[in-house]
Image 1 (tube, rainbow, N blue to C red):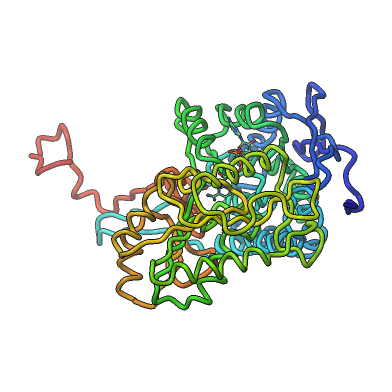
Image 2 (cartoon, rainbow, N blue to C red):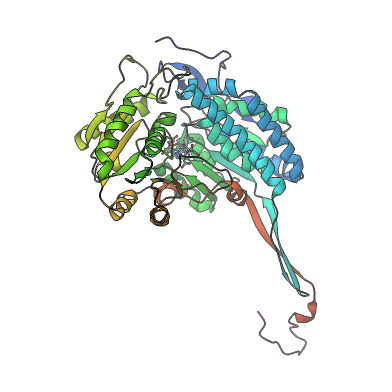
Length: 504
Ligand SMILES: NC(=O)c1ccc[n+]([C@@H]2O[C@H](COP(=O)([O-])OP(=O)(O)OC[C@H]3O[C@@H](n4cnc5c(N)ncnc54)[C@H](O)[C@@H]3O)[C@@H](O)[C@H]2O)c1
Ligand SMILES: O=C/C=C/C=C(/O)C(=O)O
């Protein structure tokens, strides 16, 4: 298959430290592959401890001495809006680079680029609307919250929708006045460098945004263990999250973790089945199935089960697999051969655990590249690995249930708890299920539609803490309590002989 290569690929991907693109201190690089040819298309600087040290020092200087944390919120807001404008203005180019680097279908990559712009716009508006609490004790005391940026935020991001997920952290971290060191995923470093020009042109001072590329165990690890980085916001696998948690423990760092998922989509017989079908097909096959909130376990009430499975399999067989750059493509190429092997491994395991009704290997006509046919397994028992483990590809497990209780038990029967999708027209059942399902986010009769004001995060192995809206502002700021006494008459007077009355 002929490969579409975007114009103006860089000759090398570098770090961006203190306002300049630089190579690694030791000159080391790593290969970056494109997912269609699986050939190395560029070398990226492989950051290590020394590069992280330089980036953190620049970020710390910009925080301690620079204007950024001291700007008025509306001044930072104006700059953040310019960032959003710049992302929007080049969203087609961004989508092209992102699709080339990740294998995501170009139309979906474009949607993600637009989301990145929206994240900046949202936090630009939120910081000017931000107000903090005041607590009055009339005549005696006034207490207020003094919200302050924290310092250098370490941002560690995954490869599935890189630019958008970077924006998710960069926007609130910067809008609140912190400085940052971003460590993007090593599979997909291409788009992260674009932030450097975007921020500079928008008026973000040097040293506020720093980028260090490299492997997780080198650059990522050094960032997590750096004493001058009080905050780590991480999105990635649950097992990596556990390691980061342990490595950050001696420093008592602030941690926010968006981790893996195996989210259930529960379809009751009374649901609008056409809508449920649309949403559950999109829910696992969009973004190539490489989506943290994918509804990758579909639980279907027995009375509509056979019909649903048949229609679902038919839809999956009709999904257009194609070159990521083709606007008709619905599922592109998986990000990397290692990930392709992992997903194909699960497809083989699935054949021993469930009934294959669609896909099951390479799609016809794609002899090379990381292509996996949209794959559907029915009759999957909850003990199956493909029911329990995150596959992060275009593979879904469908399981029947007979009662609300059984549906709930199945929904909760994994270590994860990121999202849940529920399809029913029975209000009482919908809300009772929502109360009891172990998931950070529930969508009722709804696709995965985000409202940026709502909390985003998982329970159990799917995460720690929440970001989104004011929760992001809380994570990226310290809330200092300031107490002012207005009337000293009520203060204790030690050593004066005046008897104390129940002093604190
Ligand atoms: N909950 C969410 O919001 C969300 C969103 C997107 C992706 N994800 C999850 O991310 C995973 C896929 O991404 P991935 O494979 O890139 O995850 P990953 O955990 O392998 O890597 C994520 C990032 O962590 C870095 N890293 C790896 N080891 C590290 C270490 N020891 N110290 C510091 N950093 C380290 C990597 O270099 C990368 O930048 C899936 O599990 C998916 O569900 C979750
Ligand atoms: O894949 C990770 C994160 C996705 C966040 C979303 O809002 C989404 O599900 O698209």
